[in-house]
Length: 337
Image (cartoon, rainbow, N blue to C red; front, side, top):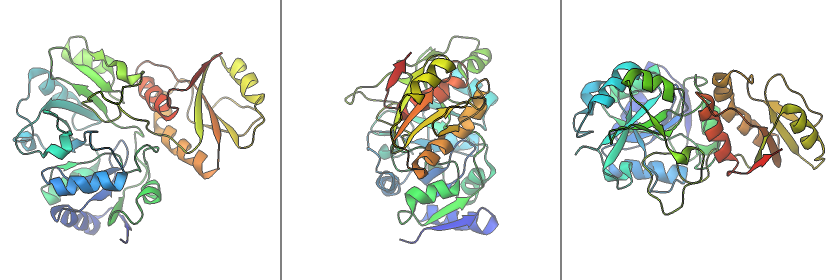
């Protein structure tokens, strides 16, 4: 299959819309990362997403919509918590897990009775939904397990020959996937952290929002999960990634003692070491870290890195999203100094 990259404009959006209507899969930008989109009501289209990514079929997908009217048939209930979150954070990088409706196919939900839904803020994604009339399921447009793509070239690297079209809308603004929150029970639970934080949601809801243990701990292979990003190794470059906890001087001394071939460090902007390194944002600016993390992990692959020692981000606010992606890219390998 030939894979085209087309700049996102009126003509290419029409082409993407037509392909979606025919049951094909296309890659397109969102404000978080690039997504691999297919018709959420078409089981064969959804299977093409899983095949292109090499993604396990028990890992549910997120459905993207452009208007509140598209919720009809997609979900069976919108409770008060869901409504408040939608009114305050949609369109934007927040996915809400709700009871599934009759119109979404089982393949999207991995056999669950719930479905994750979000309304993207990115103009291109919304235009494709509007033009095609299709609410699409869209995981990140990368080979399963690799760092998520934040540019069209990243997508092409993984999806060349597997899909017909990639819409190039430039670099993604946020850089990490949406926050995922379940409102299936009385107390909302964050299943995947992102730019929309626990504190932001608690302010809107006027109640506690819990954080799933799966955000910082490994999930067993036989456990059912409600959200993408909770199971399996994710976001990983080819190199072995090891998170090193401790102050910078201890970190510097530790990594400089490893003189192995193709050993790299992943640092904050203001830091330097004597071994090869890349930085992924200012220490006190988690939004920057989120924006650059995946692109730096992909750059380490291009540099041929074999081992990467990574500085550990915070675990509060937006930084929790960065920590979650990094600890999964490391397969939970952590050294405490």
